[in-house]
Image (cartoon, rainbow, N blue to C red; front, side, top):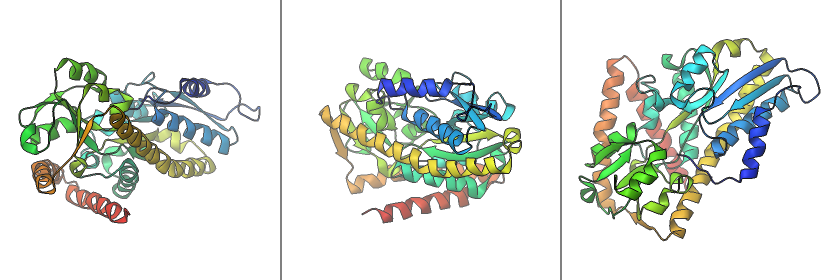
Length: 344
């Protein structure tokens, strides 16, 4: 889910910009000094986009707001980021809903294997759905926007041309993607991204479920030989950008309006960045000479059928808790269908 391909010099500049304090651009002391915890490392394009967002807010508020970015989980770790925003450890935070399983039961529907076509579609849909449903699980913080990566695919050491060849293979996943691996008949091995390269290289696992951008960003394309294009059941991972509720309420209306406007613009900026990263990932594996396997239409049906129980379980669990999971899922599927229909 991460890409590391941006120039070192640019990353250093952004880190310096993110950490600078002191005076506002016009020389006046900032009225509102905010902290922003981002779990991505500073060199990651999504951390850069978050930093650009902060600088744009400073610019449009004419220096009345100053935002210090703490990237790489240096202020709050990825799985602590949401609680850090709620409790005021940071004024702002960016991390994944999935890093706190069970905490966001309705919004977990965003990460389901629905066949997300690309990161821009997933990002737009995630933000729209969270706004529409505004579930109780996100109260206590102000969601500014959500972004989400492109569809998860299957990268393996040996070819997987149909679902039967996946049976019993040790496939790396984490959270929901591990559940998808099991549903497809593989042996799921839970593992974070930093450990995956070595695990693939040493044969601890035989493949990984991941967005294709990780094959370049984490160099995992070097230690796999095949990519099975499983976008038909592509999952995503939704990432919040949230502000502490008291911080939000303590800002004047004109600044809140600026934050809202900039956030709306950054939805597409993040989504387009995810798409760009995926394009670079595909180019990287092709440059390495890795074989890309397209699913046969008849076999593709087996893949979609295998993940139906995951969708059913989501609906059952949310319904049991009095949440509109069925409606949420239907809306997400409709947005995907609309995006697919708009493709040339």
